[in-house]
Image (tube, rainbow, N blue to C red; front, side, top):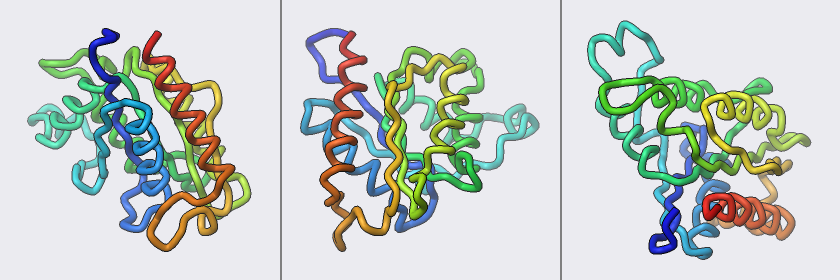
Length: 191
């Protein structure tokens, strides 16, 4: 990466829920990255309604929102992904996004928009494991696509206790660990 420009990151949560704790965590990570000098685009999956991946739909024409997402991913050096855990794995919405965005088309080769990207993976959940099982699955999905994953993933338990009424991350431990993870990811981009 040229030293003449700021690193570009996408921040997103794998949740469609309006009041998602993981969306709040992704926003906190995005702000930390901005404070450290990155350009960050926050992506709300609700703004990109995707049909379930289906090769028949794909053959009829790539949905416009898929093309927009591919362009966003292609413009990014790194990813900040807050991944809720549903039944011990990633959400259907996040997996569907990855399935669509990784597909080859006339502009991008298979998984091109994931290859060489640096990613921080983190989660929060009300449970005691904080979403770690889902993060392990997400790592297993992204690594074969060529995405470098920060060596430390962050899973924050008791999500109902780490944010204030305005949605700010107020748990000092979680905030410090998330900042370290964001900084690790940005340092990997600079390499």
